[in-house]
Length: 199
Image (spheres, rainbow, N blue to C red):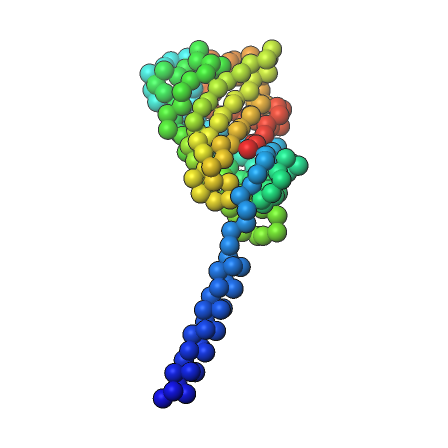
């Protein structure tokens, strides 16, 4: 009996030891400290086009990708090698061509960001919402500025992310499309204008 007890104790000790090693190997990498940025290309597509007539909520979806990432501002934590982003939300019923180049408060807008991280094939998937949204014009150039609520999970938990999206079309072209017969159904960014995501 004593021999059996000793064998059981030895097995238990080995199991605890293996569990400790496994737990240590599963420890999350240190949270990022500092900042990163990635260039983006993508677009926002409206379910129904924006026209001169207001009075309707307009739902939209957005998608963007980025691979040109700069991690020189990070002093610790995972290095980002690419991002894939989707978004969905709604413009308020006051939206029309006259508000196209003005800052409005977006209705609840969800953003999902998939980070490709150096050293692993797994994606770090984070969900958040838009905290602030603004439209800036500089001459004919149009930029959409977005700040997210803090990320609530993953390696970048607690970080607010910033989107600076320079539109491919200038202000007069966007307005012309909006007031045209078909309205404005898509805004692209990152090809004709500079666009980026940063922490």
